[in-house]
Length: 226
Length: 291
Image (cartoon, rainbow over all chains, first blue to last red; front, side, top):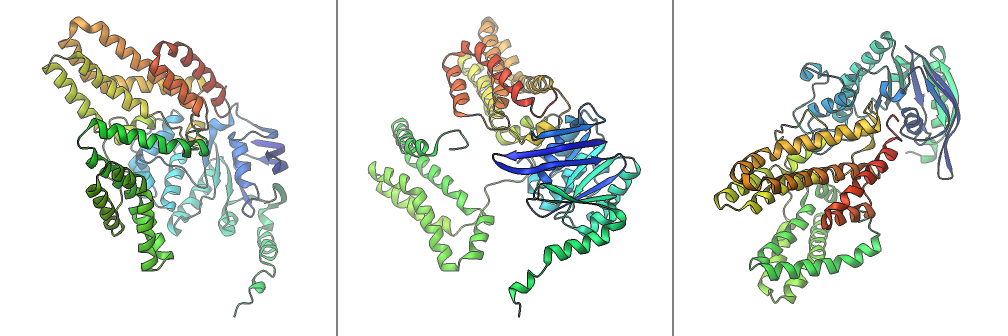
């Protein structure tokens, strides 16, 4: 379990996260939605320990980050490292011994090629494969469906469901509401660094229509499309 | 320049002086300076021939504007080279350079070769994997120099070949990695630094092993000199590994660069710098690794 209390984050004078209280339980999938700049990625970086913050983040583990798999929005790749070496690198950093990496290549990636030459979607899939093989207990997936083809989308959705059965905790952000509705137990709506709504599965449809109404409003009319 | 911790204004002021000093030195030292100068200029503008970049420009501008833009940017980039050639009264080369500039605007090619070069270091963290692929040609040269040093009985050349391997390995640690790749480790800062240093020294030893064995056999009487230089390589490599993380997650700054440069002039100062860089690195790494 991860408990977040009164989490605030400032970049200079600008407040990016404002007194956030959250709880992520074992075996549950949580979705975080919000427009660009709402503070989702900063929240993830704070949980991961990549940012300092005010407030507290506690968990069942002595060092939360050692049990955490983090998929970044835009994963970074070295210029001359193959897909296979990237997976190996991330496994080595957690002292995991991997064998037959090719057999675990569920997204059929060209593992012998330099990862930096991959397309956006392929990079995302490689980064995801690497953290899946790290044997983590908690996963933070920042936009896992971004740039990914429909087949891989289905695979990722299925992986999330399997992890839930394995009692792992998953925190996912996505702009594609339907993928979150398919997998999450709870969805939190973020705006201007605050959690403005916590919605359980039963109310997902209502949240989606509220979001549509709120986001679209009468913006399109302003274009006076002809 | 900002990346190297050099203020932009100072960088732009120093650049023309550095260019003139380097160019003069080149023309003093070799009769082939004209050709080398041409190659350097063309390698600069070859960056503008990247297909990705030019496809983007083509999508914005029409054919005529695109051509003009490419010619103008290439000419501007080569102005210092053209002026220096004119100053050296190398009018023919100056003319050839400008003709080649125009030819280059017609070409689109990528300077990156994406063939996967095999490396024996892929099982361990990335520095040697990436570095070896970028500098693989250095090692045959170093081994060849060792062979020459033995055949002409010149230990200095042999030591130089070992230093060449050391310098290549040194360069692998000059750039800091994305913080994510440090954060991923479930080690303490101390364990992390020890692991990095251990890997660096073992791989350097492996790469320089053919040189060391050869020189030990052929110059056994001077093994003490060989050991001193080998240990010196170890010391510099340890220093650069620690220095790399002493500004984490940022790149090494100007002052750290100056300290490293100072150690090249006066190596004993490494006894002060190594512990200094180590303690700075531990402090910085503690922000993302376990205490």
